[in-house]
Image (cartoon, rainbow over all chains, first blue to last red; front, side):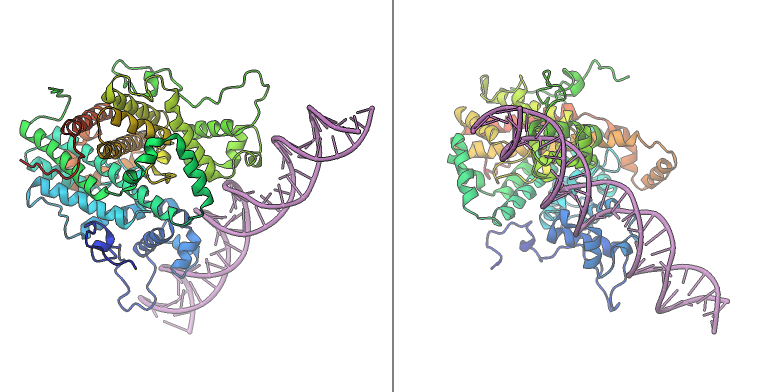
Length: 264
Length: 264
DNA sequence: GCCCGACCGTTTACGTTGTAAACGGGCCGC
DNA sequence: GCGGCCCGTTTACAACGTAAACGGTCGGGC
């Protein structure tokens, strides 16, 4: 069971080394491993990946670390702050990804491609965490999900400006890129979540009743197999390429991608 | 304060009649208004809009309705189910929107435009509810947020197929459309949420410290005013038009928008 | 006219949650 | 060797979601 497939998604966790996790610098002989903020947050990520966000409780997380709940409060001021830390830790995995670079050595398109796939890899590795990445209120208005890190925003803007984008175009590209990633990845992980929930209760009774309801929606029924196909990887790639092409036009025309209404 | 501006966003709540709310059919002389599922869900939407999702408690919602918490359980099996109802009620506001039609009378582009703006109006009217719309696990894999209603999925597919899209193209368009809406609107409401939170604590101390941190990100600092500009309406419009153009090409070429790699 | 069961909101109760506060033990420098 | 500090535990409490029992207020059958 669970063997890697030939046509595996290059961003899926199985397609790579396996645990691309946050890895709290493991215990190098430290006996039982001392508690500290990083270890706690790492354990929280693990826990959410395994049990889901709703199951994360201070007491349960404590138990997972072999400690009482209150011990966590010496390193983490509150559960809310812990969740902020979880979000930060997860997107910080980008720094450890050898395929994503802070500086564009091979052009801005290569840079954006690598960055996008890096974020997608994170989303797929932590499907239960990603909705948190998507919805937690950002620290500042211009730090947008899912790229919620000043360092990446800076990197992004510099990369594009250095490649010839003017300021307005770079900022505009940042926004378009953010919504592209957010929409595609949130949809993808939410769909994945449904898939695993669905194989939990194959009861039969509910299925029949649900299918009966469907009689009012003949087109949905007719296209059900098409609709159920998971082509997320291809769609992601296609939409990303389309976005890059759009940005290329913007760059070549040297304008901000404003209301240009060339409708032909 | 709070007066409508000249360049008002046509999808913003102030730009239209005001409360586009769910309106639980008001009390037509029924004294104190009987409890029922619709009224409870309507009150929940109101409550979340006003106080935020985290503040919604069975006891508080009961109090808001002049009733004890346990009374709600006669009409709603659980808080989780109540939230599902909230999501459903909010997207069902689409049916009451006179500018959105279930059937495309003026072509598929008009149909998609109206639908998109209808959803955007809902997102802006209920910014605290929209993340719920975006992240709650859908009932079936092909019911995607934010258009989480079989009736609208059916309507969407029929509209496109009747307009000449083949089945694959219609399904593909449904996916692209969903992620477009999800990404743009989630980003927009999350940004709006930060804006209102930001004007709560203008302390000065934190601001200075935060600004100090920014010294490492000179480009972000330099572009701060550009980054803070809210051009959501224009960006939404532009991305929507781009999507429609893409779909138009797909339609004209009579292909499914698969891996076509014409890279020129 | 009376009574009875159905409806529907209240009361009470329980286990779980996040977190404040007091506690105590083991290790360190003096 | 001993006082203080670091850090995990204990105890405590208010608030939560919800199960169960309760009671009042009806409308209809005898």
